[in-house]
Length: 374
Image (tube, rainbow, N blue to C red; front, side):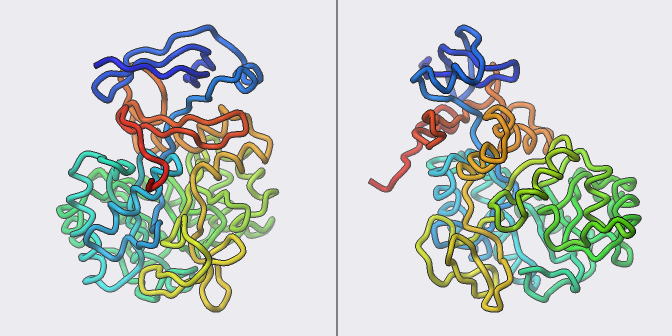
């Protein structure tokens, strides 16, 4: 049955004050008169944006991806209630058995329809192929990458993205093979230098994991991994919670990297009250808006994608630009032409916002998501 949503609809060619029609979970048409963003926000109509896409999700609603079982289904629902319509379940550095347990739980959810939660498109394998000197909040189970292990895990749940440290022995050569076999590789948790980053991009890596965090920083005589990203990257993720990265550094990245996109790096503490939670094998604590290890190290976040959009706008971006950095660029990074944009043929995944950018509606494949348990 054809259904329609009225509002100020953000399309790739600008705002349309009118309606979006969808049928069978796909967008059929967008119609209405063209308006600028100012008129869209003052029209009194809801703002209709592409649903948020989050490529770095460790947890939410009190559950952690590494829990296995139905944990990721629970996490996907928690994030859908904040406007995330598609996501990657992200694993932690851990012993092989722990990672296997996580993949066994994620696989069936990836193969199912979205149901009441965000579409789980696959896995972001963040570790264990990272530098033990740049763990950040990752547990100390880092090890060299194994193509056989990647293949075996992929058979259980589709791997969409692999984070690794390119400076470790054998990793630069492995990047080319991973890319040839269809995986996207991004660089992170790395003690590598600028030249390591440039070489890895040349070998086929295409992104950077939570830019600035857990990587060698930028110095004018030693530009580091962050410098390689700022000088050469087309894509990179960044955590726009205003805790992981100073607003000034966020503005630098926004000017330097054409398709910088936001991720939450969210933990089980997301959407939950202050208190103690788990992040893989770590105990973490949520307080004062952040999530930390007991030594004070930032350990993922409690960020949601609707807040990420508001934070980008607070930095001076238009709503349209903030939408690109919370949806479209992430879809493009994964090569998903039918996600992250409101055009005929695309998935009817969208969020509705009021003039103050508060979330008032979420649709996945055209189906409304309840924003609360009630």
